[in-house]
Length: 359
Image 1 (tube, rainbow, N blue to C red):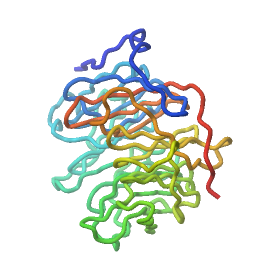
Image 2 (cartoon, rainbow, N blue to C red):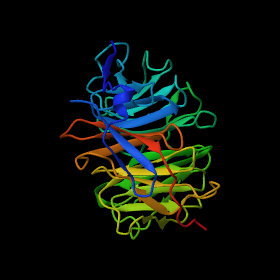
Image 3 (cartoon, rainbow, N blue to C red):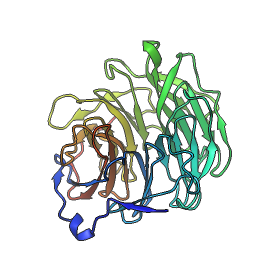
Image 4 (cartoon, one colour):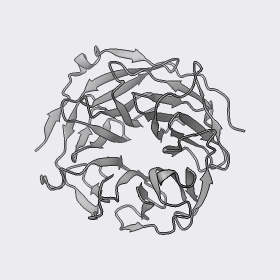
């Protein structure tokens, strides 16, 4: 049974309170979701259609660009997985989505959310999958990553998931927090446990057949790297607590992004997403959201991060994910243990000017 939540008329939506991000040209509108609705990740495969997942088996879908959302039943109207926390989602198409969560859960829908199928599950409570990334036309099709050096690979869409044991583990026990795919290249952020070893990025250029570890200087990221996204196998942005770093050579060298307006990067940043216009979105706790826009021509990412001002009292909210349906139309989902989750929608005005480029 579908239950409509966050029901908003388009006319009312146009009059919601909003704020404009500094020089970004984006206006963000808040859509509160109601009690108990805590989305932690979002994916918009086509314009108008987005899926979001969250705590307690939450799965949401919108077909009008985020103006209203419906809850989807988990596994054929069964509540058996209601206690699972879903942490990541990636949708190669409007019909096909893969979701991950705790206890090694990988969940799939092949019919746009009408039914769901369990692709992987384990009784190991320590095997939490934190993120997933899919690409519709290249190999590997999807990669899911999680705690305790866990990586699962799907070579072809609708194929069989295989745990990748080629991941380099000589950095010691580590949690993998986010993954980016670019053709056959895989980028995984690694944070070592209990202060052992160094933090950085695991990189495979052969679809997961072998990995190399590329550390990120503690000067640039004193508390490690958590999120990553790439536009090409060379151009990536990563983040962490108080850090936004950019590479133009596949992670061999990193530089710190400059925050527009001066000052450092406040709070803990946890994730990055890349959009089709060449931009990067960096996000995390206390409502933190930044855009790194593409340089004109999209050759290299800019080095300037533009803060976005989300309207309302967002200090208690963590931005869990951003997905864009077009250059100026984006969806950001937020969650909090203290207040109901909120979806933020953007609309475009003028594009920001870019900063420097990576040489």
